[in-house]
Image (cartoon, rainbow, N blue to C red; front, side):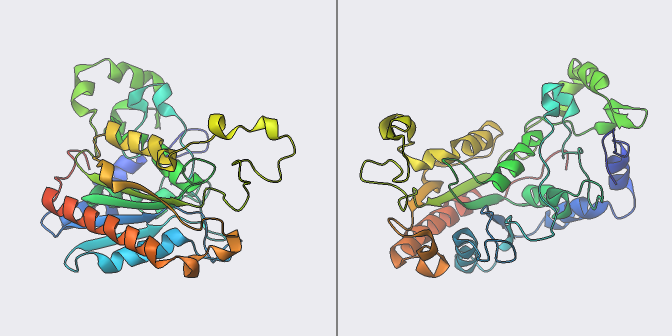
Length: 317
């Protein structure tokens, strides 16, 4: 079932599905968590998976599993590896509905739908909106790719624009079976809009453990790539991010802007594999000192979110 016009089913289809018997997996998850224990969602953001062309699982995935073993046993621990798996659907891109009208961007995103055959979407098929909502805290473990977040993690956060003021009532902007930009613009100018447009995941905590090798295999002593013939094109002092933690600043900014707390001490970068060949910087090559740093981050995460406690569910799940 798709939701937008063009090749999509009616925009209200998802809403109707939620209203049917059983209430959909999303609402079941929310109701089940109402009086349960603390819940954390751990995400590995690396693209690399053994069951695809890299033929190796990522260090992020290994650290994710290591974290699971270190957290309290009475917590509900959810986890997901967002890496690419051969023949599996991928995360579909954001369509930038917000730029037409904030009210056109629906919470949760209804540009795609679960189990759609024409435009399969990993976020919906993994039920990620429900799992992000159910969790009291998120732990995101991910490498640096080209001075920025990984493609899959960036796609996920792009699709989370709807958590920041997205429209929880797609029925209000329906016309001829589809969500309509003109009706969304009208809704955006009403008193009702100011009441229903909320930060739907506000109050949660997100921790980021970012790791990278700073491409040290490729660099000379001057910081420039050894293979670069036109050395004048790349100036290390001008072109390089000195603090690699800032490679994830856009995602941290989006979280904080949307009411997700990211404490500074839970936003950490670790240099792993300094001056090693890429093939010598695999899971089995992670040194004890890096696990010590990671363990400290996990313990700080545990202490912070335990003190903060559970987070109330959103008004519009």
